[in-house]
Image 1 (cartoon, rainbow, N blue to C red):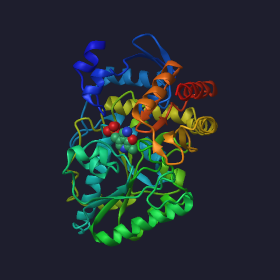
Image 2 (cartoon, helix red, strand yellow):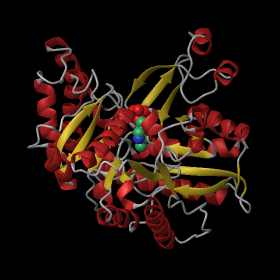
Image 3 (tube, rainbow, N blue to C red):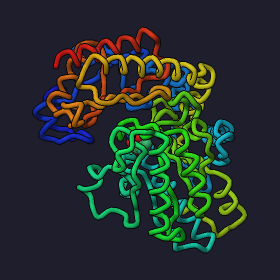
Image 4 (tube, rainbow, N blue to C red):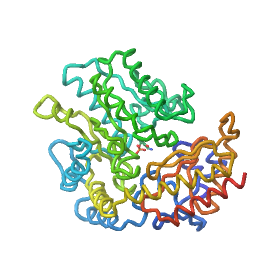
Length: 442
Ligand code: PMP
């Protein structure tokens, strides 16, 4: 396994040569919020799988639901002409769960990138059906991450995820993100920065022409870009600007839905009602590839009652009965355990713990979080100039933290912490102590 790990397998988001020189860790077991590697070393998983194992690895009701569904009906499609009971039941439960966000229907996908792709397609189709075929462009935030398909990649705000694959979809424009630590306005006040970014959005819309823009897609809290929570005024301003200009608002809630932020959805965290919400990841606790685009009233009004309004795309695994059964069990457990409260409490503990580490270690330039279990530490080699840390030092922090008991994720200069929402106080303390050891090693 160790030999073939790098030689036979190309790993996502890495350089194949780096993987050969520095093989990825092989994870072979799990329990609760911990994972164990091939050498028998067990750590707290501060990554929570990949922001998705919200209920931990042992969540038996989800495993049972998967096993039961596999025994009963392991697969059937939901393409025109057929459906399945698990998917129908799930659509009912999801519409109920997301009703406060204004959602009324569910369109099933196989994961996050698929959900984004579907939302972008549905946005263009919505405008075509309304006789506004010229509305084809998309707006998104710099540093936003929306996935890997050509459409999703086109709206990604980080050029590193786009450059190798250009030309991508034309007509995608990226607005400055409300990233207080670094921004083109040199604005350090979060509220003022939110207004500047909203003004930049207005300017871009005026420049492009509102009637050329289909949708704005945005993560309620930017995740993979380094956990960037905007000031609370930002999302409502974006919603108002979009509404006023006839632009659909899509929230990419692949990370933020189902409780991670300490609210049930990112939309609810900021008090907005988007036109579509992209979800995936925690929808099945990571146990089955699955996703759902939640659909709001504007789209329902245009697509229903019009036999010309055919949805001309879908995935073989849309509404997969095993994924749907897993999602139903997840939703039930998520509600039963009321994970939002624990996410908020443990999130505060981690955020405050990281802020305390910042007092101790100069290498920590910025700590971001404060909304549930989404926390980031941005590492710098010089606090005054904010020069990002070098890759070798970041790798040392990661490895020493791992040897000291926590799997952390380093992405560029950022350490991203996104553990399971069932984390205990002791687990969170273990993550902080492993981080302390990692920084001390430098
Ligand atoms: N949107 C967001 C906000 C994400 O964080 C991700 C994955 N990290 C995606 C979309 C893509 O999801 P997937 O990897 O399941 O395709």
